[in-house]
Image (cartoon, rainbow, N blue to C red; front, side, top):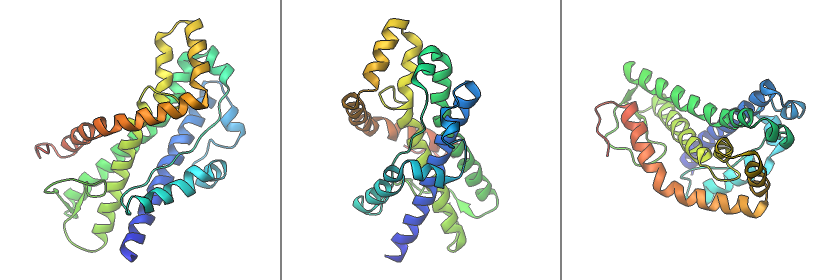
Length: 236
């Protein structure tokens, strides 16, 4: 149990950092593009406490429950940042950029994790994994000790943000990718689409469909990411 508790703490730290960066990126992009709603709510910040207070269920209860129910295997949850729907309707291109800012933050964390893993290999702390099956074995410590904890931490940072990136880019409500659809719609169709997109029933349906799609999407994306991280390794 102490080992599972330690892994759980690492998962939760990475989850909180990743989710906070995602929502802060949304909020900052919205502010810069003309919508101060999230800024007024105090969400243009990397202070996780502010985001936890807004979404205590999605950032505390759900991730811990999922970690326990998954057999101490992984963690997921959510947070949110408010925006002005009238601003979004009148500024569709800007709304798309605001929506993409969150996944862009996750992509940035994937890249940072990858750079640190490669740096650890150059320093002799990490070694090339023989195989990668789970979310917390992307990096392998060359020896036991602190390097092992660092390898698990960076593996989770890489994997979780890759999942968040792909999941949020799916063009289904209420995910960030649903805003991309607005770029190909005329004004009247976009207005109807946004009205449908905000309905709780359609949002729940979108989440269910997105979760099903992830079963088919995430493994090929993970393999691509791993082969970019470890050129020539030939993971398949």
